[in-house]
Image (cartoon, rainbow, N blue to C red; front, side):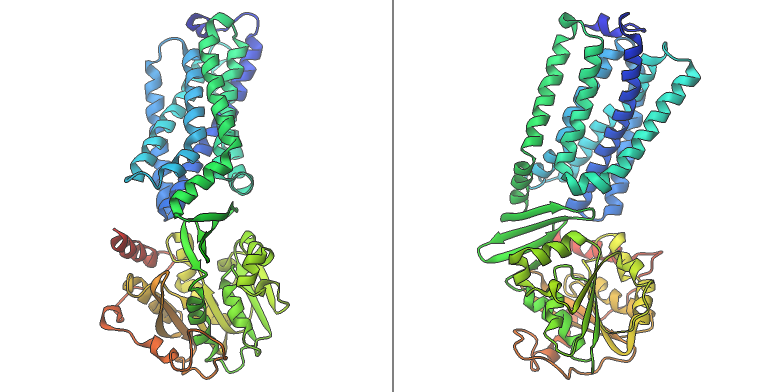
Length: 514
């Protein structure tokens, strides 16, 4: 086989066909290589948090590994085509199974980062071998100038395809696990196509069998992708998974344990149906109870409709504008009977106007005013979320808040992360608002913190509806008392150029969980 595959011009019967297949393979392998890199970065951010750090380290490791692969290629002194085909088969196996394997291994291994970066190094090294080998295989078929131009053109076009397809089509339509298998099959198709073009049944039989076996395993994985995803998520969450989907923005998972329904976004718990009323009553009512006439209310985040449910209890409210980035979330909690029952049909109410947009951008396009603003974003685990806790963002909210209005902001745990918690208040005050902190015990989260903000120091509650299970006229004042271990301390302002909150949040929560 080596002799059949190694010749500089290939078999006499198909040199033109071989050249075309090789050039097209550049497009395929460039697309596949970037897809595997994006899969690793996305999985790392889903499972380890802080997307900026994870993507930066994964991309850096991957590019370094590609450099190692390019350097190793100098030691391939003959049989370039044979080596190239075998590299394609290995990349197809490793890259195709990478997402499924990482998901399945995450709950089982003690050091997931070691597994992740070992896989990134291995795939990157193999990908780094591809282009140098292809250039050497094609060197006798094109002039050097034309060869470099062709190879780099196809390589960069493939990278563009991957970067557009991944967020717009692949993740929302296929999910991460299926995407890995599909592009593994593309890699193995390149290997099989080359073997067929240079075919000599007696000499390529071994590599063809290996390629077909890998292709068969990828087809099996693709067919069982839902099962693999479900097995990995059951192992990860330790609960029965009743819904799992990937949108353009996040992985949405709903689990059930007995009567308890839980929502996870990118692996982070958002609520438990057993105690979410404590969180949402504490988020909404200290603000609404301090507004004389809350006709127009703005909710930022809260795509599950649970904060909107609480607001709609107040007959004084005429319209709720809810801004959530992900239409998959709001549609899921509007159209699924079990979830719509949990939010009491809030997202289908004629008093609720749903906007699916980036809140950071949207607040700059409207003039307000709003009598109350409820800010229910996920914790600032990464820079893309940290901007929603920044001084510049809060200045926009201060502009939208009516003169007598009150805003409530979800502010993380003042017990676990006191510096992070009080950074929210410091930042709101830097935006020109007066603040008042409070906290509530939510069993699923522990002691959780919120911050009231207004143009004038927030007064006392004057209106609480009947039927609340947690926030009552007697219990509401006690939420504002902080023991010494949660007392206010000096903290920096969270600005877009320093992201101090994201850094302190990571330090405090990593220390708590470690």
